Length: 202
Image (cartoon, rainbow, N blue to C red):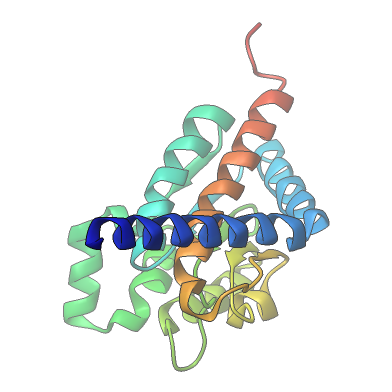
C-alpha cells in the first residue's frame, strides 16, 4: 500500500508539474522572446560582447549559456561567476553587492556590449542588489540590458531593453520554473541565431 501511495503521489506530481510547464508555454510572451533574439542578433552584427549574470542556479545557467552563445552563435560571451577567484575577492574585500558591477567595470563594458540577466526575481534594492548595481552600470555605459526573469521582473524588467518574463503559475514553484525556462529560452535563441547565421557552414 505504501508503494502504491508513493507511486500515486509521484504520478500526480509529475502530471501537475508538466501541466504548469504547458501553461507557461501558453502564456509566455512570444513577441518578447523575438525582441530578445533580435537584440542578440544585433549584438552579433556589431561584434559586441555579451556578459551573462546570475545567482545560484541562474549562475550555473549563465555558464552553460556562455558556451552556447560562443560556440553556436559566434558571440564573445562571458559569465563573471566563472571567475571564482575574482568573485570571492570582491565579496571579501568589498561587498557581494558589487561582484558584477566591479567585474563589468574592469572589463571596460561599453555601448557596443550587452548584459543578459538570468534571475528569478530580477534584482532590487533588497534582493540580489548585485544585479541592480550591474544594470545601473550598464545603463551608465550605454550597454544593452537584457533579461529572462520571473515574478514581477524586478529591476531587470524596469531597466531592461528586452526582457522576457516567465509567467508565475504556482507560487511554490516559481524558482524551478524560472530557471528551467531560462534554459528553454537561451537554447531556443542560440539555435535560432545559429540557423540564421551567415557564418554557418553547409
